[in-house]
Figure 1: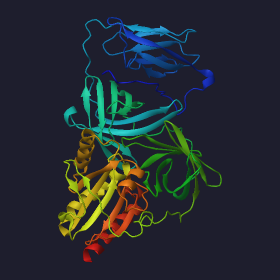
Figure 2: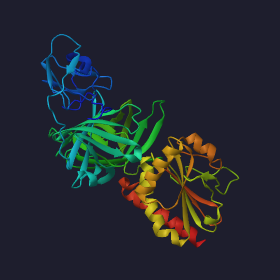
Figure 3: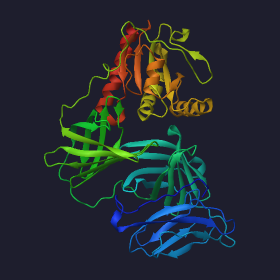
Figure 4: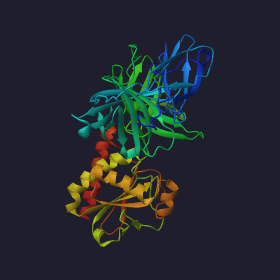
Length: 491
């Protein structure tokens, strides 16, 4: 396994680790006998509770052990496996010897379905599913599976017993060591910055959450008023759409800023579990179904959680997305001058857009809802551009250096086959959007879509995005989009 691959504590049993009272943490440094240098990515396993961990770039490892655990096992490609009997000590420094005449093992290429588990925190595991398809490494593709969605993540790269899955749309990657029908590794930034998230995957597993067989308390299919409580005490009103079939659940939360996309999970007794992953941070929700039919839960991540409550309401709704963002008093048109990747300045006043209906989207390559919007707008534009319609995407990105912008915008353009102009507005920050687009009175969400008529007058502004996961609400958006364009073309 290449250096940089960090194997951290991965608990393979259940959703919650052993309690603090019954465990202790063992640490130490793993080094090479020949070179006296630290070894990164050494697999550390416990015989007994089956906990697994790994050494960091400095060779240091940490692993939790249970009172009944007896042996620590240290294994690393091209080195002899070493076993250490656990005693009362909490520190074991290990030196591994290279195996005599050991040739580098080339792992088989892992085509097929996989079940993965992110270890977001010591007590929080988030499952996901993915599929690797193809006949050889040079043509293999990865698809992330969430409910009915099969999301193309990218192409696979294999080097010896290491497997890399670039998640280019989010500038992330999954980096694994192949151990037979199992993968051990991390989700990390492609530039290796930030904190990697440990992940384990197993071939041939189709389930998402492990199930005990406990019968659900009832069927909660329907529409809910759901309130998420922020850290500052503010409430965010959403609409939850839940579909249940036996113990299996599909769900999506609609917000004024966009939807949560496809969530998939189960109901066990009165407990609801949901997750999703398309290459950014994993999403995880857990909740209790109360006796009165209400829902109390929390969406959880690596750095904390956000509580929510839900009440069934088939009339639950959000504010009209066409009323949330508008122009400041005195403005009727929407003007800007921003450069594209080649440095050419583009403005709605350019001759290219004269006497044409113009769609402007305020977007970013890092934004999941923006991906859904581009997946709609790019083919729509190809089909409709001959009718006298143009489009411009204003990008607000996480970094503004030219190398980074060229990388992420080119990936975005190639993925969706974008033929309309894309320009750089600034850094991905709502205040930056407001400063660079002074005619906007309010900016709430990426993406935001502006409909502009042939005379340059803003007709409507749509805040957020209602994507395919929302079903009939997405169909309604598509209809309204086409109706508005048709109306403006007739003016």
